[in-house]
Length: 592
View (cartoon, rainbow, N blue to C red):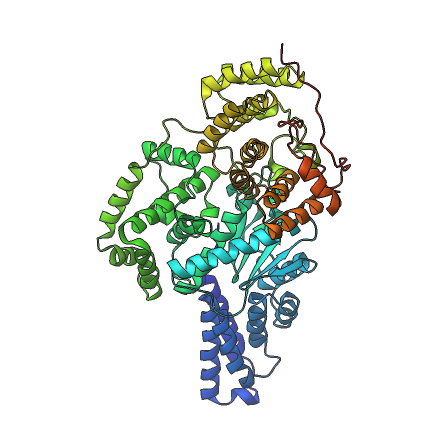
């Protein structure tokens, strides 16, 4: 999600500065009325450029006005501080804004500069051709190559689709540790972030994203990076004139372009929610989405709004292609209101567009029943029950609490019994109970599908397990746990290409699972992808206590003929490293 600063607040503040600048006792430089007018005009241009997300333009205008003013004039210090802040020079920005006598209060530029300075001052730095990636010391290091690849890919895609590449220097991308830090570096309140599940923001000419470690089950962090970059492109390209509903629709529709076609971001569970809201006639009006979808009262409202605007842009794209998307942005940049811009781009009155868009939504293949929203963006501190540490996640993955959301009581009872039997190593009997639960609910619940698949893996009934897992992925695409379990099957079969796809899908949501990187070490090695194998090996070392030479040994033994497909003994950072050989499991009592 992205937020945008209110221009009214900015203009009001500029008015105060103008009063401060031109109502002070006369000084030598201020005796010339024409000079005062020139200074006022140029400072207005600096303000407008910042409001338009044109930092290079603001810097040029500021360079022109600096020789005309004494160095200690507070409005000059303010704009110098603003430009420094937008360019990521936070310590300098804080000093300049203090000199401008800006009040140090929540939401002020001075507080933002100080808080951001303190949060990122010890961050590590990595760069690519067009991006600077700043991340906390620690396991976030494994994000770097994947993040930069994603960002460069969406950079190329937006140059192709929208015809825009950001001017000036490299784009800053800052990773924060949690929701508390995200609130401190942005203008959102922590409560708003928690309520709506906001995990990233595009603002101040940069991208701010929360580390996946802060989220209970990970989140689609690569799509999120792409989503926020698209917000930046739209803001710069349009000079910040695109209303929030079009902003979010464009970003959501185009976010999958880094990995393929546009329009791949709609999940079946969100589509089911949209279908429910259409049937109940409770869609969120476009005007209610302003100033930010993140400020809607509930997470369900936010998800519904995202789905609505996604299909608005999908309809434009199907009708007019990327030329239609560009046309809307250009019309807005040229001063048209949103409805008029859509009318011009689509060649139809806005009421007809709304009617056609609603008809387009109603044509979508809504699931026959509401799929439970197993929300990905749940912060660890907000998750029900204890969130397991990385070192606790593997083993045989026994957990009874995962069935709490199963609404059908008989299915929940069968699943609980299956888990109890599998805990007691009565795997065949467990599989029979899971099968009963799965027969009742089908692919509706990830928890049942995955526990059933794990039991089948223990019994080496791989074809059946694969079928169950692929069925679950049709309902919950991108699920990291399901993709990991599918990856085990494919890797065991030495189907390295498909196994690579499964594990990379898992990594796109849960990049800190050591199994993913250990598996990729073996997969890339088998495919002759030496550089990628090195990258995966380094990530494994970062996330475990294995030495580099041990990683290859463990990777070769990983999922061999004797290994247990449902039990991965992968050491995690801070835990005891496993010996570099296969870990034979206790034999299941398959006869009971």
